[in-house]
Amino acid sequence: MTDFAASGDLGRVGPKASVTGKRAVASSQHAIVTHTMLDTMRAGGNAVDAAISGCLVQAVVQQDMTNHAGTVSALVHDARSGETVELNSMGTIVPGLPPFAPVPAGKGLYAAVPGTPRAVAPGFMPGMKALYERFATQPWDKLCAPAVHWAEEGHVVTSFEHLVLAQTVEFFLYTESGRRHFTPGGHLPQVGDRWASAELAETMRNLAAEGPDHFLSGKWAQEFVTRGNDLGWPVKLEHLTAIPPRWASGHRWEHKGHAVVQQSAPERQGVFCQIVLGILEELDVPSLGHWSQNAGSLYYLAHALRRAAQETGLLNDPHVFDDPTQALTSKDLIKGFAAILRDAKAKVDLTEHVRLTRGLPALAASGASKQPAGSCELAIVDEQGNWVQMMNTLQSGGIPGEVVGGVPMVGSHWMNGLDSPFEGWVTGGGRLRSTLSNTMVLRDGKPWLSLGSPGNVHCTVPQVLSNILDFGMEPYDADDAPRCLPYEPDHTISVESRLAPGVSDALAKLGVLMNPLPAYDYHMGTYQMAWRGEDGTLSACAGPRREGRAAGY
Image (cartoon, rainbow, N blue to C red; front, side, top):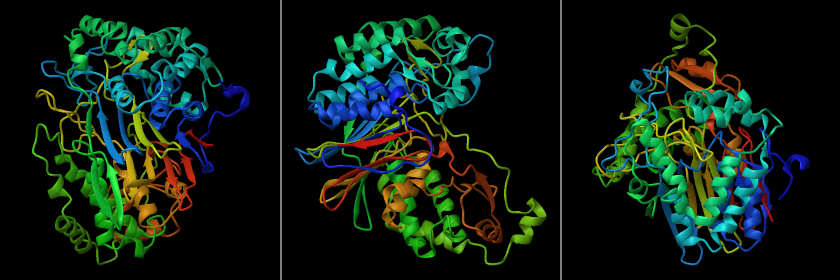
């Protein structure tokens, strides 16, 4: 295994070059993960083998972002059959097992706080098993070997990893297992430390020997059940496999001659993107100029994001609710949304109103967004043309704050509300709704572009997609460009502070205050992308807002 500390190849926050490869490319948020995936393909594995090996390693070396008890989702293009399929393996609310919020010592109000994570059945390993059984070609223990190695030897803690751990570790300080795991010796692992875990290494060795069932019915699963029972959650072994991962064909839609495939209901992303890009097309926003340069474009974009967020709150699991996908994406409805935005725009200069009521310059208090940060996206293409775009995340699985067998768990941010980023229903089998970002764009039925990211994916995916499909940007430039959050009810737009001079003043004329986010806000995601050029050359990139590495051969 490569000594990444010695080679200096640890990834970095900031600008990164796109890479090319004639045979294969891969991109992730960590150099170890990217090189693990490439090594798997060099050794004869396909893109799915690489994805499995990469995910298992990622949950070892990026526990600030993911773990083996969270969620996986994927779009997989199988070159042999020509099929592009969707996998949804989010944590599940099992029939007869309501979500459960343990009450940590000294935190008596914890369980009553809306949005508090609840214990649910993990989705990560069921998803790994589903991918392996359908598409993998290599022995399971071979795919686990890198995860065993890095858990035993430890990885070098980077400055970004330490930053995120410092911001989020309080969640794990409520439990004895969390304190022991994340603050060995009473302190977080420091920048430059080699962080290993004997407990996690043993779990990875057992996983290699027993297969995914180690987490579903084996020793780890039994310890998980015991821990839940001790806390008062009546989970049983059979609950861990009660709701298997779901395969589907994905949400498919057309935009300016491009075929887009994304996650289908109950996931919001596909419908969200179709509404946003449809509104921008109806308003002919590209002709106005990019939103980083033009206040009118930014105004329309932020409103389109808000409208899509509101409407997709009506999406739920089609196995439990009727499915409004077709109605929400009808051309007439989207045309009506655009007409409302066009007709509701201010027609007089409101700068004086903004000055008198909110002050000038037209800027709100600066501050980074406080959206969830923890997920990992992977983009992989092999030489046969198999293509994987997938996410693994610490969210939506396990017992919140607990660590079992070296595996930390976050549980599910289970909320019920039209604007809930996670929503589930205790009904008996319905899958949780989220905003997973896996996206593929097809030509003649084959992918030519795939993309995805952690961090505010509900509103950043349509922006990056529009940058490429509407504004003709190269993929890395599309990721690098400034991004915004949806329009706020107080007439504020939060946007990365790299706008052209005069945009904030022009927004004030429309009665809008600009809230400047950091120039590159890591909460706004950082994209893992892969694409195929007209000459067949493969390319990949990792975005500038977080660490990451793209590579190919």
